[in-house]
Image (cartoon, rainbow, N blue to C red; front, side, top):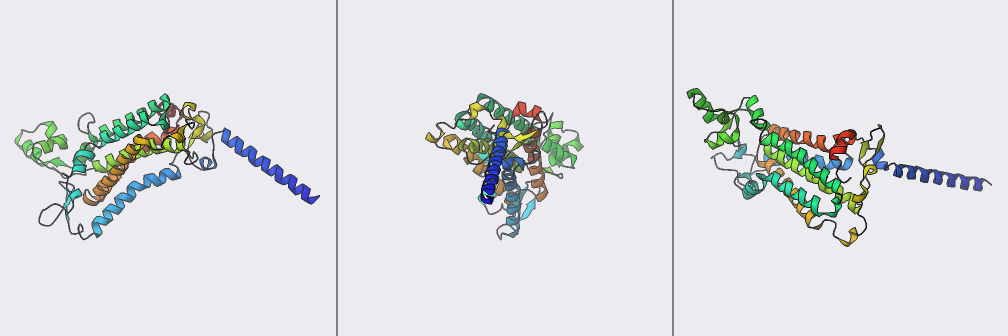
Length: 335
């Protein structure tokens, strides 16, 4: 008789567990999703985003400890390290004229944009028209932030404005101001300063390389890896979203059924050419971020570049999870 009761209780518990699992699945929740706050990155995202400061710290420590770099003198005018005799640091990547810097980093947002668009429009992981439109919308928001920080913000970009606000100036322009011959462009922008043979000196220079490479890498991580993970079934959904009624559910509850292309996916490579191209750009971004950490900028300049990128990353990829109205406009990658 006791055995019969125990069997009955076991069956009842199993039934209860199954009902709970079914209810959670119906609500778009997974155990991981229930433990993840919509206000912070998921555990996997924290690991990915933590890679950037890890590379910066490793590169900075390498520069301090390596016999090839620790004796170098930092030149604030060029944001790079030089040997005592004035020659450039003993590395190809320490020269701003290296091909990777000239043709990849200097055109970094173009490479990131190309990788994103190729993946979004050619890879089956992003098959639904609405998912593609939202991916482009997120890219547009990040592009706007990139432009404001590095290109134009109603005149000088934010990087140049910050440099001026912290006491920086163009040497040549400063002399011409005294003589009364300088114009506003020569005084306010780094590009114009270099064009007239001047040097940008004195203020705090946010690392544009760190900003660009971090922002582009984070964009590709979210826009490529989340759709691939969902499409290939690599891991359960762990992101949470706040619904319009205040309920907390797994992000999968809002998945577009047209995006569920499981049928036939095994007949094609998971990455494909589009995925490989995107991951190739991502890998080169991370490598050049490490080179920047070793050979260019001060600790604080690198930190402010990283922080400036993180502002946009949080706004585009985390805030929509707890602001339903914004999520309706730009969505969540892979959903």
